[in-house]
Amino acid sequence: MDQVTPHEKFERLLAHLKKPVALTKPMSTLEAAVMGYRIKDEFLEDHIPTIIKIMESGIFYQGGLKSGYWANESTSIPIRDLETFVFSLAFLFDEFKRLHSLPEQQSVMDREFETIDAILKCLIPIVSTFYGKRNSNLLTQIQKKLENARNKISKETATVPKRFSSKTKQAIAKIFIEHINAPDDTIAERAAGLLTCLGIGTGKELMRKKLHKIQNKKLVRR
Image (cartoon, rainbow, N blue to C red; front, side):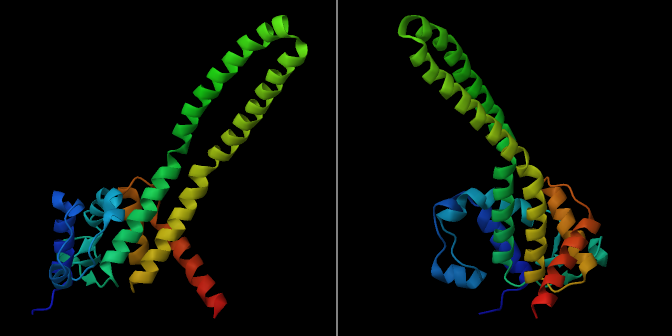
């Protein structure tokens, strides 16, 4: 059996992920062996669009990491375990996207809190008039607890996008380092390009700092 080249493996994996049947019909063991990657399971289904977007982002060349800016100037830098590389990136990006949507979820929660507060404001004077101040005070206490909970949730949610954006960039740098042996400039350029493609704006210099931070930690541990 002829050996599958990195470029062939890349193209076959991408083609397989794009097939509608890829979500429901697993490859045969033989087919998986020939194509050189593990059989996809249901866990991947939600991440497939992101995996495809990563593979079509322009950071790859001939099945490896693109080294230059133009096809006629580029060489292919080998990637250790392409499947794990793109899958890990996709899982990370999708989790970031979920966390990044929390402010939008907060707006929905704010409207719900306002609805409950409006109901309590109507109920409190009615209960006070017909059932006494003692009973209306119970509703007043609930109203105060709800307001405290709303304020606490709002403060915590406000810090999520910035905090997780930084952590995501650091994690992306780590995945690149673990799978690709290339100059820092090349990895920083490709990582920044991928982040931009997926909607997380960043620059090459910031990614270079993330790379150096990870590398310095490794040196300290030795």
